[in-house]
Length: 150
Image (cartoon, rainbow, N blue to C red; front, top):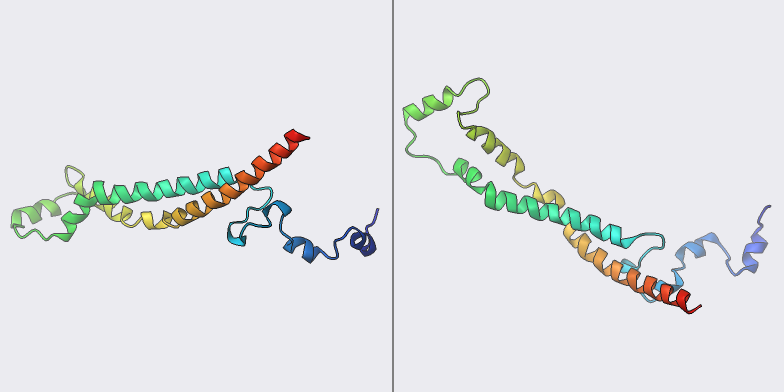
């Protein structure tokens, strides 16, 4: 069965471009930046943005509260550095770790510095997804009430 251009015009759709531009009838009054798309579960989208935002917050707290003392030790020069302390550092062994493993933690802290910047863009996306989710839930509630009335 082939569909001709005449049959599509008789149904009121003149071209596929108009069909793509035409918004969903239920979301016609919603501004385009926050207009929900059909077929997308915005509960899932919001939860993923929430997870990314939580990672940003976790890495920020990790850097500023837990790893801050390790990062500050490197920035503050130790004026009491004696020859014996420098010999202890040079005798740390092939791995470069001291007996307590302090250098390894300092390297870890340096590697984690600024990690929260990777996940910070999730925060405004989370706010956007909550607005879109609001419109999406409002439309799905209206649609479910209409089905119950029938």
